[in-house]
Length: 253
Image (cartoon, rainbow, N blue to C red; front, side, top):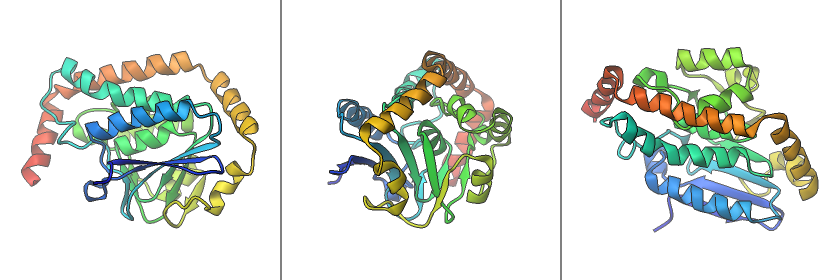
């Protein structure tokens, strides 16, 4: 039985983490969170890595966000905080890795899927997908720290609007906002031409540029903002609007 998060390491300095739940649109389960934490520790200790790519298995979805079987709605604020906090820690660790990170969005992404993408330095996305920070339609807000990260990826005014709007975006809209850097046509391959801009550089070059970026943005400030974001979402977890949204979801099932 294959793991729900696959880890592949290639000789030329490329590491790939693939969320492997295509039948669940690569939704994040507690097991996926645990494996993310485990593999990120391995990545942190590997001095030969030039680039980490995060992608999803299959042709349909990059990541649909949190799996409601694990990230369910009937929780008190303190329980929700304990549920959400481990993935927030994963996203912070991704954001602060010492080498570049890339979300290869091979299909649609919703909610937490875009929070994962926001944790990466760069994002490539396929025209075949659509994308949305839709948490606002569920009576909550971004709960893994992805809102704090989004404010650092696009213009803050645009980020603020996207989070309130909670709408679905095309790849064209993502490109115009500067959220993605390239449009891709297919799933990731270790020899993909789009990766050449990274893999043709040396480890020292890439880590130097990443260090510059990290110094430009206060990581302590980011960490505090992300934790506050989890706390804010946790309070909303108890709201009638969220409970009603969860009831609607399960009644459709």
